[in-house]
Length: 374
Image (cartoon, rainbow, N blue to C red; front, side, top):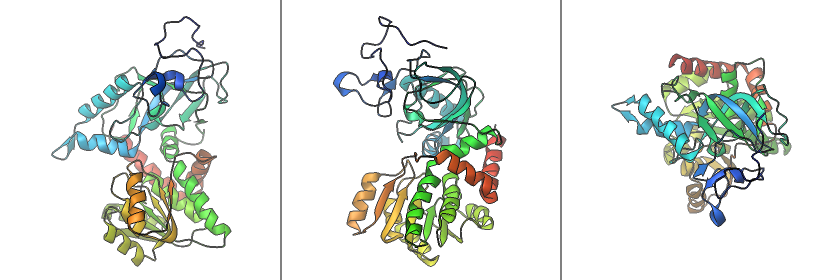
């Protein structure tokens, strides 16, 4: 086990010897009165030595969040072909420069799986050496060091085989990987587990008032979208509308029965989206935004009934655009930021995977496609 750094050790000038449960002691930049929490920091200390309440993870796989990977892939695409080498080099540069994987454009990161290889004597995370875990906090605030140059990754998928280490703070969150599921399948589910948990809570609030809400999910064929449909159904939704952008996704989603109707619409088109949702039985009482492209804020508002609820579960969302858009449209809607954490979210998402065959089939087909690119 690594030991905490002793007083008098060679530390950066702004680094205190005592640790902060939220990771302030790992912030290298900015310093002094301008110091921020790790997620907003420009640079973190990713050294392997542990403070007393920290845990070190030996990294196995990173999972870049969808908005981040899309931005990087589009940046490194020429004539429709992604330059995987250039994308990989940029990810390596981000991690080396910032001490964490935080896309400087989207501000988002992702998560990882790995094995616990050291636990500080004051850690309260309940982990032991040898546990295989998924981190349930963003890579955008997790100290990370890569040691293999990502040599096994071609840059063409969100899942990144990697070697190195990551650090969990005293107040971080991690979940042991279940024995009955492929670890990479668990990683895919846990990457978006906040979405179905929040959807279940919101739909459950309607159900508690004996209302079966109409729920529209934008990006319904994706990971968070399909889980959100299943969670809404289980929580007592009435009509479920799945919105997808292309015919191939409609063909994929329709046979599953996860949605009562699957409609084809561009979630960035205000009139196109609202018309499609209305034709399918809307406007929606609850709209869940799971797409990873910007510009969906006002269309989602128009597709939602007065007094309804919009859950923005996408790192591509501009929350200023959402707030100002609702004001400009005189829309009396409740808007919720999906922050990725709801108590029990990992267990809930994994239960949906186990209990809803259509969800499992979608995830397994996605995993097979990921593996085929390696």
